[in-house]
Image 1 (cartoon, rainbow, N blue to C red):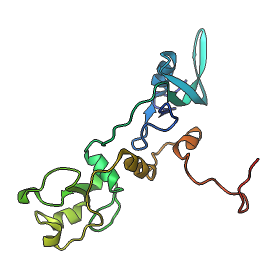
Image 2: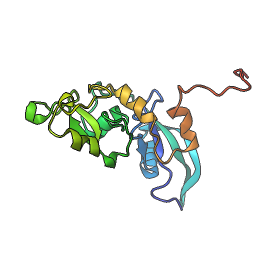
Image 3: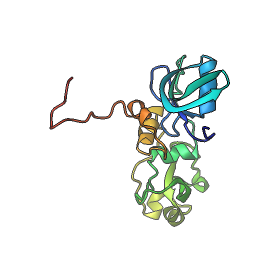
Image 4: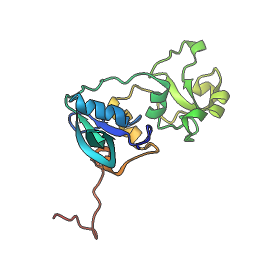
Length: 193
């Protein structure tokens, strides 16, 4: 019997690149099988586990690719999580890297001074730095920014997301998640077999 939470399928676009890295684009095994039968995806790789019915058996897909290419948004959604991802979960004042539940976002130019809530004015901050800065600008608080806020591209968010892999990565996913990583070398030379 297959667990309902086990064996998720990595979802690739029709060009065999993940739809997103963080959060990783996944389908439950049930949804992956349904998508196969509806001919929305093609199976790229499978788990050893199988599902059975009285007249049918099938190995569970571990990697599926969409049959139709999905155009990626040019401008990412402005969300708290995407701000943290743009800033690599790092406080832009002190440089400490934290889990998202310990981070806050900060208006570089405070709202009380006319600062807006946008990509260009919001940064990731640890709770301590956010409290220290208060309703002042960085120069008034004598706090230097590590980087000035700006709208990232979807590609930049995906690149940053690759540095924070999820808790579960099946071995069949590695070729698709790290396709542009440097190849391992054998004794200092690249093997060409």
